[in-house]
Length: 381
Image (tube, rainbow, N blue to C red; front, side):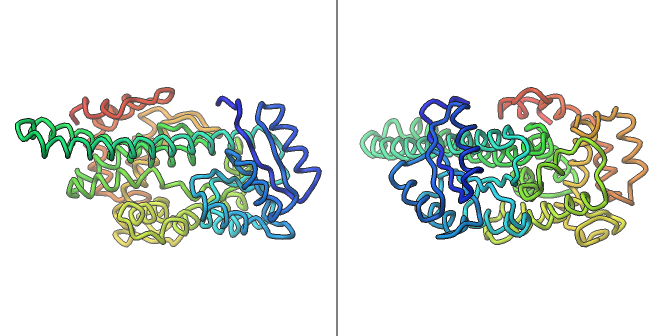
């Protein structure tokens, strides 16, 4: 990312930590301003107008939560990253609720982790800003065309077609924003951005095969990129560990389902409600041996049962920090063995019967390429 003229505000009451982060970011090409507590930080924020904020949670004279609440209420599109070593899971949930964009734990073993989180937040802020500008431009364009329609009845049909096309572009832009948010979570755990795209398309296919109406299947496709959003609260040292997890570490990993549900469950929007279900139940098992609630059979929401299959299929077929991709025959062997155990048996049969369609999706969205949204439509699945 180009760092020219990008200004970062660092708020931390530990002089050594604040100076270390400031020096590192300065060496990386950022302009840096800093403050030693929350109250001073807000004053610097007002006077310096930074592009992003790094803030500790435990500080005197207004803690990091106070800073988050103040900034998010006045400038909700300002990227704020928490850099703290305090009570990770509980503080991560609270921080996200009041406006945090990411959470980096202290002590920072590798400053590249912090810079990566910062660059990711700045890129997301850029996308949001561009989308707002695009929508503002679109609204003025629609208004102008509507006025033209009133004056020129003879071009009504042509103008209506143009308006419909513009509306389609808005919907596509919204889909891209949701995918981007899902990709932020995946890239934090060193997984490919195309993972969430493939799982979304797999989920729509399997939902329709199961008898779901297309409108609801599209809703699931839109919600599925948020299935691992709870990983925002998992330490990087565990999330990206290349070796086998200890039982204690695995228990921490399992909490991402509950954390994701907590983050998403408060919205009344259909897509967020669906995303909350998916985040909560995509690791439940048909035989009741999954987590976090050990649900079994049809007590597991069909959204969770579908994402369980599609997420496992894609994860097994992709390289991860802790494993190489499995060959297809080994993946299919596992699905046959786990039908009626880990996976819903009816959905598993539908998946196996539709394997060619899944493989077309995998090829269209292979790792290393971000395809055009129209590409999947060209497959005519």
